[in-house]
Image (cartoon, rainbow, N blue to C red; front, side):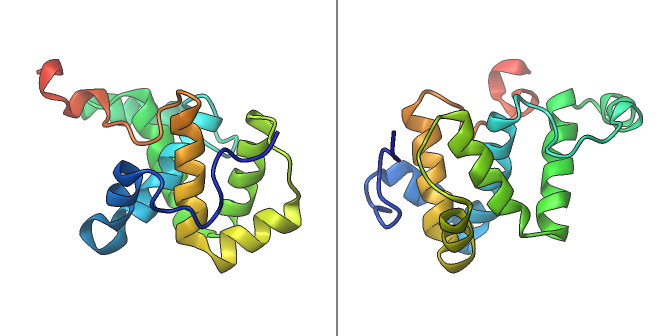
Length: 141
């Protein structure tokens, strides 16, 4: 099976395009972290002991998923090449044909297009590509 949209099809989904371009592209930094949560079933990308962080976050009124989101954001900020790994995991998760070389090219040479393509793929398959944490919604108050 191949990607449901092409790498350069950024205008195929206006909602994702608008999220990616919000605040001068800040969405491009948030979207891969959220897609990473989807692929790793709401957990952090790297296998780290998160018990201490979970207890600290819960004291601040946050959810376990927020710990994973924070760890993924830190990992993404420290090591941008993790994008290649996330893209490979996303391909494996959805059984999409491709190669690590293709992932490397997309994640490094055309980062914004790759982020939008991955988000479109997650959205089209019913995943949660850019959900607001539950505590921040008005219905949870």
